[in-house]
Figure 1: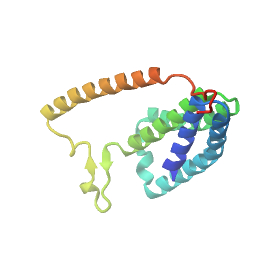
Figure 2 (figure 1 turned 180 degrees about the horizontal axis):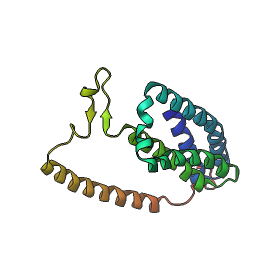
Figure 3 (figure 1 turned 90 degrees about the vertical axis):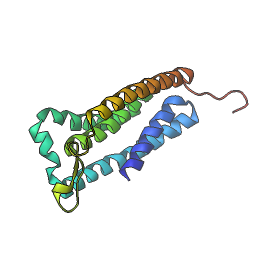
Length: 174
């Protein structure tokens, strides 16, 4: 449910950013209404996560700089309606992007070094230490990751420039 609310808000902000007129206004309404669900589900999922796995806060206590991550999530939740009410679609979209990055980063930070916790015995959990591969595989993987990332950045740069600006209707309404 949280993922659906997140995608709804983020998608509505993107549509508002890329369109004008009635479609833009409808996207803004969807973003405004969905934001309340996003806020509620964020709080509920945080409470449920801490109830099920109270040790999720351990890394935040060990590494206090990690509290920046929940601060980013909270700030982005506040910034979305702030920019939305002022019809500033680009900052609202960036705020929803920061929310997504912050929630995923916070989950990864709280789980570290465990990648997949075992349900029965913690000794059987998948950690970064017992899941790592050899040095040669890591170096080959790093090279391919760098190549793939460079290609993805180039592709998205092309798409961003090619499809820049708002979409507008022509005289025929298409």
